[in-house]
Image (cartoon, rainbow, N blue to C red; front, side):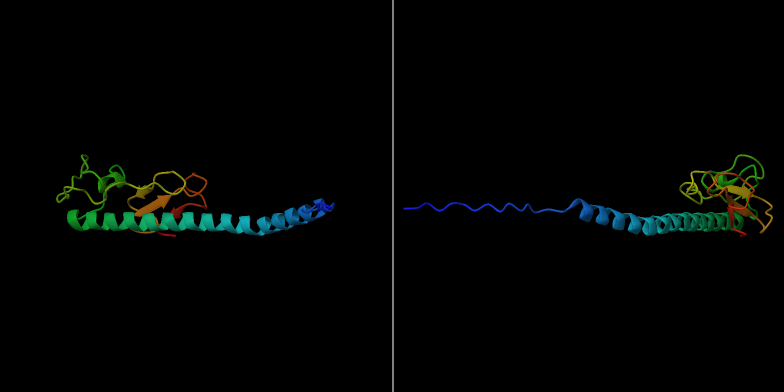
Length: 144
């Protein structure tokens, strides 16, 4: 009686080097289109966050002015929104918890700046922008 023998397929399965190279080229082309779009969206999102922060600071400063009849001075700065100023003019009606819980930093890690009086408005609130340098074209303010 004859025992069955296993027939081995000599052809190996898998991808050829050429097929792998084609896939890598296609993935590279896709990445070259997708990555710049993602980077552009990050910049746009950072700018939008800075604008939102500036609006929140502006609202806090408006509440400060309504309670005290004036905006904080440049010396008092935005810190007047989280702690009662100790330099004149002292606020008349300062809430126990302040106007904000904390001062935000801009998306690039810098503090926002108060200018009283402002150039664009009664007060200006500014971010130094992505380059972190003040008074150049990439600054973001409530007047721009």
